[in-house]
Length: 410
Image (tube, rainbow, N blue to C red):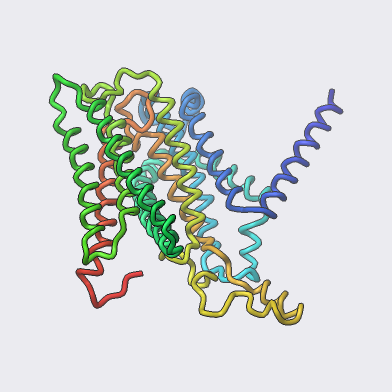
């Protein structure tokens, strides 16, 4: 039996080593995203079953008797803090990396076994910290989560403009038709979603003025986007306006679905399955949005690009000397700039750790039942605030050139 256990341990170690080597050779970004996804799963597990364990720690909640919901928030915040420290340290280490000759470039792509051990130690260490530190982190995490949402909005705006420019530059009729078809489709979807939300969150017999306000504002914003984008003096397009309208409709849905379950205007208050579906959708959306944010960090059309990004270079191609001798080609390849900002890449994951903690803890609110995820009036106003900030930023990108004609906007 001991021989079998030894063989299994050896095989497991070899498998982990091979996996870490494969990640470092192919794509470190996928590895970091996977590690972040694992942290979300651990947060979920500790939130659901970790309360009895935390109650045995004398330094957690020692000063008073706390509810199950309080311990669940503590578990989520402590895992999040360990994750935040891991990615925050990496972000600080990677500041100033300019090319692939920098030693920190190899740190970013390699050493996965060491990174996993350090990450695990930081998560474990977070469970030995006093409640006061976790309380401060929970307060700071609210602002970090808000910053993460703001970055998501900026990257979404950049994506929509890049998408539109890419199809317009093709200068072919079929691409113009495709632009029109996608734009109309997004607008139809946005208004369809808004109509469904009117049915779900405005039941007859109740005064649901706040929900009506949210939904009417969402539909008005969709019309405003189109009117401004198609104005002759505005250099806009219908595609970004339609995509932003659909996104605002989605954010409005997430906001309304976060209303307390005992609120009579919440059409989901009778659904027992909404807890699991909200959790899965929220976690999946977070993982995908974080990965996309990190991948977009090196885009040439966003302020998030490193100054040395090859996409921001001069008129000469990055590997111009490849046509010359082999030695010159090798030197040019070794000295090429990094394709994205490593420090911003890790900063995104650090902020996302805060956002995921807010998602799983209902923005540190213990007033709702522990079976629900991201439910409460705090979540509602955060979502709706995100929608209005998105609308404001998009309108600003359209009107800023008119308001400040002497300035140049990228």
